[in-house]
Amino acid sequence: MRMYLSVFSMFVLMCVVSDSGGDEIILKTGEKIEGIILFESSRDITFETILGNVTLDNERIEKVNKYSQKQNDLLRRIWELKRKDASQAGVDNQLSDEELRLFEEEQKAKGLIKHKDGWYTKAELERLLEDKKKEIQDKAVEKEKQEKFEKIYVTDKERKEIEKNAEKESKALKYVRRKQWDQERATKYFNVYYKKYRMKDNRMAAQISGAPDNLYSKLIKDMGIDGYIDWQVKCDVCLLDNESSWSQIKTIAGPSDSTAFGFSIAKEREIFVAPYGDTGLSGLQQTSNIPIIYSADTLFNYFLSELLWKEFLQDQDVPLWLIAGTASYYSGTGMYNSEKMGKDIKAKKYMSFGNLLKTKKYPKSEKDFEKFVYESENLVRILVNVYESDGNLAFCRFARMIAQGKSFKDSFEEIYKDKFESIDDLSKKWFESLKGK
Image (cartoon, rainbow, N blue to C red; front, top):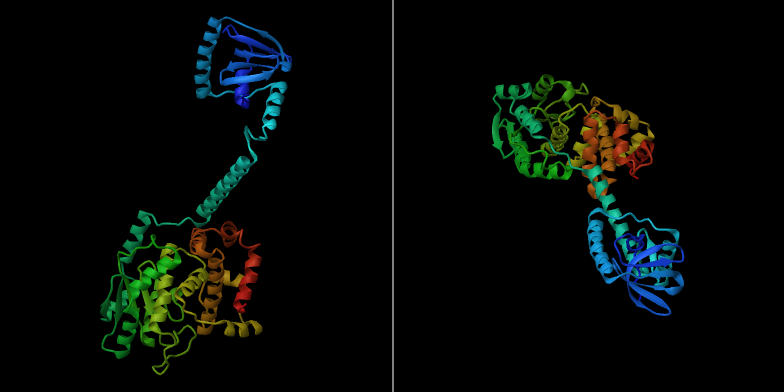
């Protein structure tokens, strides 16, 4: 039986004979092989090599020079040293054309296929290529996941700064305390302030403080920011039940923090809820006869979502749509709907995509505020849902990039370039979403 060698083996085998001894086989091509002859016949010759026994046809051999047993023993000792050197340092695969042709003919005769530096059966090669393809795909998927959806955690320094600020009180909360509002309800993460002797205030407080801790846990999980936020200092929630209280609080806190129904302050971790009618932004006067526009718990859900998102973005100066849209999307507030929006689109009374991205102050009227929130929510929904199960983490990274000063365009291209053809493509999908399509 013949033994066929790899390219590596052939190089070790077919070296020029030195003074080390051993039999010498000279091929018709001129190459000289160093080996120890074991068997000769009229058809072929078998000899021992550094890697095993090899048989060559006589027609390939020009001449054979035999040496003594002593020289052959010396050659075997040298082979042992060469094996050791080869395993440690490696051997350069340099073959003559004749050597390479001879080896390849013998491998092909066995039905083997060459791939890179090895020879395989068809089945072995198909299995090898399939395994390699899967390995490459798995690495690419893992790399993409790490690049696109790497979760962003707050540093210890950032966390300490957030908690330190949350221990302080804003001027608005100090006003509440000065008016001797009662802190009647307290949970693990919240203190709820209201005037307990008013029946409607009792109902509002009960609405909010029924299960706020569960809502807090649900929101940070849904947003993909669990592990980032973990409140050690409670959030203070103030219920505003009349136009006088709201007017005072709004003036103290500043109009830039106001929405049509309340606001949240991230730095001091506070929420102010005004569910009873107009806030004064539209210039209208509120009376005690005006019904509740949104329930206290609905607005609390919205402002808690807003507050958590502000803390995640470290209360940076970020676009207003990013705050309002996220708060509405995750809280499920639903201040507007596609039917109303459809009518506004027909009447051309809606905010364009470009203006939505640039808006820095909430609209003055309640209706325009609701419409702005609805438009913002639709944009957030598209960006989150485009990555399906990984959408929250992708959106988190996108928002943090914007909060850190990157433009919408640069942030969009880095996170969403594979999901949209362009920003114009996103704008078209957003507009179709507004129309309920």
